[in-house]
Image (cartoon, rainbow, N blue to C red; front, side, top):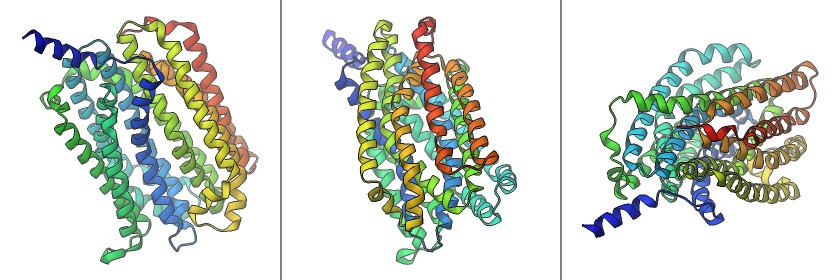
Length: 459
């Protein structure tokens, strides 16, 4: 009996984390692969669409549709972060019995949000898009694509909630299987549906939408199977808590809603940016679409380390080791900024190698390279700014992160309006808005963490 109790206690203690570089990378590397999934889907879609014979039209449309769908993906990511913070805190407190309850409520809430997203995309978004986009052809193709693409949202959200569970319980290594399955499915079905191989219909742009839905379902299904066979579902009693639990639902929403609004306004501002870019022509839109792909791809490591930050900060606070928070943050920043700087240098040394995969002409290359220089420097700024912001998330003070985001977005929106619309300056100058965005986030987040006010937060 004593042996069993000792083993059970050891299993519970495994939920607590240290702050070594090895522990950081152990959590962050699988997360980076999981975050890579939607980015790889976007990039795969755009590479195939870039080679589709319609003179770059599909690639231009994909810039609007990609950012639009990313709004809802990031809403799910906000809920994911809130859920992950709570699960990590309960893990640090050695309260595994609460984890299943929190997870069940997270899934319930995510499916409600998915239903709202589907309704908005079908009935509200078309009215807005047809008003703000100058090209009727781009507007119609955007609407048709999104009415298909949005049906993948429930699968994506359930997948994200399972990611929160695995990261929060120090099981992030199991994320890899779902990531690989989703990526491979997306590549296969993009090739089949966009170009119409092996008797499948040639659907062009809409084929990318269908392929992405199938891929998201595949990723969700595979990670579900892995969790079941690894005994994680049984350990945390995941399927016993799908009834409505007002207490835990309120707790999740109190942390997640500010994060959801924070990410939503951030992505809405990016849609605003791309609408202004569309006013500069199809080439400008295609170039900016590729820049978003590159930003998302390279940023996966940074976002993984940011997610690791929020999880580990919450976990060690749950252990009563709040004095270790700043030491942890600086360790993660050294890794994040070091890696981002190396990648940025390599991209700037060989820009045409990266840009050539999109199959565009020399005029595209000429327009894209100056923008690429700006974007890669912004990646370095992001590498430390986002760590400080996610440290605040880990403390449970998500309302503070929302306020920081709101202030920053107001500055960002004013800048892009003046540069791209009022004065119609080149898009390279418009992309410098990323410098303003990340430096503003860093300054405000650093000042808050330095103040020590986060130490009094209890969740």
